[in-house]
Length: 109
Length: 115
Image 1 (cartoon, rainbow over the protein chains, first blue to last red):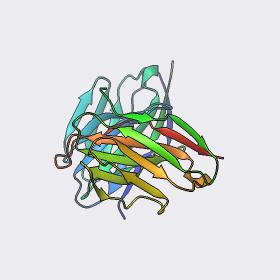
Image 2 (tube, chains in turn yellow, orange):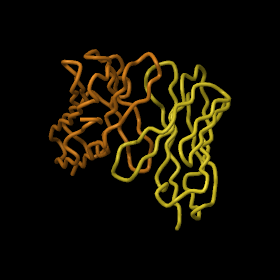
Image 3 (cartoon, rainbow over the protein chains, first blue to last red):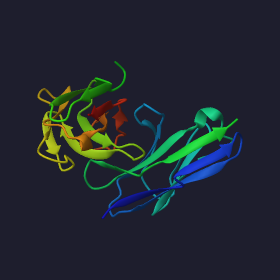
Image 4 (cartoon, one colour):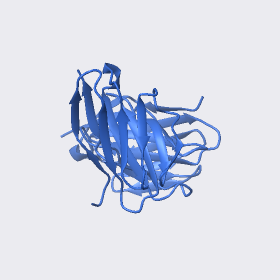
């Protein structure tokens, strides 16, 4: 069965303390891996799409990378406004996204 | 509007009542998706439309759940004879088309509480 696993479940960082979130997947026929940010009471907000191993995407303090079995979301010098739940989702052979359970990130001022 | 719009934002119903949740996708988006999100979990797929055609309904939990998109734009998710386990946030997403791995853009959801 295709699965998406995110770790850690929760992460608390001091402002400016860089770290990485992990998304691992077991799947054949990966069509794309998506990162979303979700704030409380809101829907997921699209961040990045990665299509093939070795690909990298950057946006402000965030950088997403992809290997054959996992993706990392690197957060450099985070600020309190980066606090949110970060969701990883994988698109397989059909059109539906399979999501992980997310990493709840808290940045302490 | 610029984004996906869902209504109502909150819905409280008594067990056994029927509910209808509405989704207005981004204008021109071909594909529309419904997801269910339980507290502390990631969204789980319910069903998918390409224009007015429902191409995948494999995630609908039971035959009490029904979705339609009659004119290929607005969609409605209907739940009949609601049960307490139906309490969740129901998210709608749309994407430009279904063949280019375009990202799905989400609305803010309808939080459904069944008493």
